[in-house]
Image 1 (cartoon, rainbow, N blue to C red):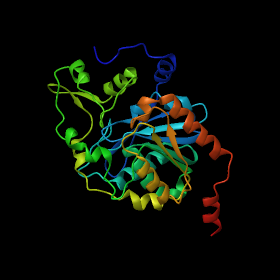
Image 2: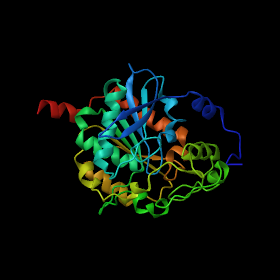
Image 3: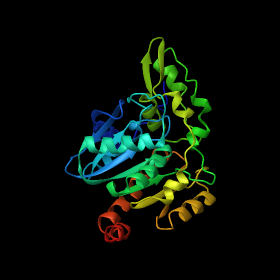
Length: 303
């Protein structure tokens, strides 16, 4: 049952066999859970999931970087295996990212990679804590004028009354992506769906807190224009969210100092659609940043 319709490829089975360490840190009286792979003496890479998602959206991607990087993937509060809050804000989630970075250790300043809502959190962190970051890579996180609180938040009505299902297989049949899109990698969808559920009295339900979608709107426009570290912007070729108009607006906000990279044949959920193309694109950005000079940082230090 479930969604397994084809045999997973060896790169995927090898990746998820590389099991991460699991840790928790208290951030403003809330337990924030995170996964980590690799050697803490390596440069740190922090992977940020989207709304109603969780750290295991990265558990088949993170190991691909673990030979060169110390990779950390947190569950934002209200998501995954982290605790819940009465109120959720972008600023609090950005604080959680930095607290996880400090707790996990690692060398020098980390680089953050954020998808969708996690991309908005990465933008907020890059604006508020840019001096403490080596860079931020933003994946299909639309910044528009006027700015939505997030695409998940705009569409969050469907998440506000999560149901309880009698058994795991029934629950898995009800897992779907938002916004809706075609999927070809059913083995990935099955993997993240299984990590999206928890057993409760009466059956199985989703891990995320529905109150996540009751938060107030935020202004990422201002944060994107105030980022204080290196940036790279990526979007899916087939994404309905990061349209050409959105791309142009985001490039204007960054002063056209951040590359805008298109991932071929990807919809909004790039890590699910084209994971290997995403890995290659992120590797290329990281390699460039390792061997080039961050002129903005040099200018800030000199000024």
